[in-house]
Image (cartoon, rainbow, N blue to C red; front, side):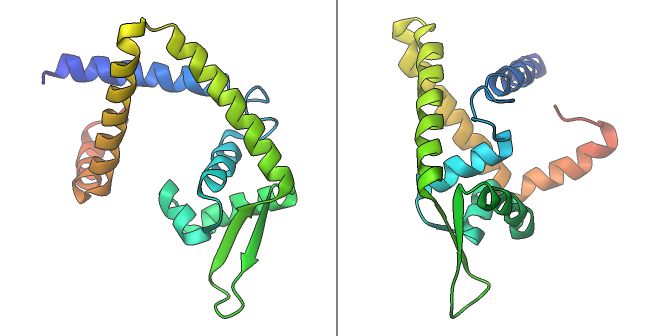
Length: 164
């Protein structure tokens, strides 16, 4: 693949990222939550009851960073944190009733938004676009899980200040 196609892809992804965050930033899509709180609430909602370690792993964060995020959601009454009696280091996170209601509301808003976006794509291209986004997402995840991603970042940081 040539560099022009890669640059085009990077540019479109930057624009897409900005455009995707716009309707869900502020109060529009996440009901007063920050985008990070919103993603955390959704992840807990999808997983049901999840350990802090597993949740941190799914975001690629350390547990102390995620623990602060969880605490903000606990204070808002949206998630509960349950410490294991036998091992105090093991913490389980789940949605409260209020958190479940907000989860359902945010899910409905996201579903409506994405339904409206996909409807703007010609019908015969909707499924291929969705499939390609899934393939691309999986490829990015696989690449990031490999150690080569970190090596590329270290080597390229000397040559280029921003990869994006």
